[in-house]
Image (cartoon, rainbow, N blue to C red; front, side, top):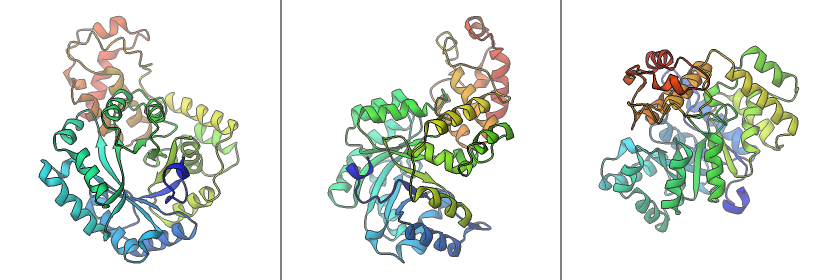
Amino acid sequence: MKNKYYEEIRKNFGFGCMRLPMNGTEVDYDEFSKMIAVFLENGFNYFDTAHGYVDEKSETAIRECLTKKYPRESYVLTDKLSENYFHKEEDIRPFFESQLEACGVDYFDFYLLHAMTAQYYPKYVSCRAFEIGQELKKEGKIKHLGMSFHDKADVLEKILQEHPEIEVVQLQFNYADYDAPGIESYRCYQVCEKYGKPVIVMEPVKGGALIDLPPEAGQVLDDLQGGSYASYAIRFCASFPQVCMVLSGMGNMEMMEDNVGYMKEFIPFSAEEHRAVEKVRELLKMQDTIACTACRYCVSGCPQQIAIPDLFSCYNAKKQFRDWNSDFYYGVHTAKGGKASACIKCGRCENVCPQHLKIRDHLMRVAEMFE
């Protein structure tokens, strides 16, 4: 997949620059520079950033530690158009040019329309972001136009149907979110597969949560005697044929050395390893969470249009992993429907729930967590 589409990418592991080594509130340029050197020396060359990363310090850090020091052809650089940085069509090009300047480059290898959801998609369309991206590609200022995506599979399919010019999709994909009803990692992956779009994986270790496993789940991986918890999470993602790149945010040299150690000579997941992470996933689901099976019987009759299973999925992920993405997805699933606090306690949902869940009580717990 990687070689067929993007010959400039050397390996299927990338340096995600949303998390960087820090010295207080500032990026530790010395440590970052050393990590970049190790990364490049081991044959890797893909770097991913966005203007808002690390409190808007990531692009500048890349300029000071990467692009000033290495030939342009020695690395692949991805940046993104984030919806909160433009309000009308005329804002996009000046913002793009400021990103080139911040990163110290003349072009981006990949440019992604960032954090695409059903809520933000109309803004990208009305501001002609897709068309401007194609224009920038024709001008040689970007090589590949793609998008990063945070919504459900049917939304992704609609966008790819309407915009075949999208070349690559960046997805939140990991073994914990694989079948999560609020994220639909695998279903989104299948949509990309259907439309022939290579997948770039973000959050393969779920913001570090898949490194900090409960003892029982960790023991399952320990019994394999094959590597770190991070190695299983990242290799799981990289083993899918449609995946061309797996990103990891690395905050220190120890993380860097561990990651490049097992990705330098990548070995796809074995059947035994697949069975192990499936068991880990089931153990994680058994924690203090809401036992919703996402049958969605409760949704159609809700007078407040609350996406109950999706909000429960956000709650479960937050409870299990303490990850910030749960808050983002809560916003996604309440953008066009009711929040958990909108429940009027009519009880229709509980009357049709096959699991006999106390949905009204659970929605109160969800509201307390997110609102």
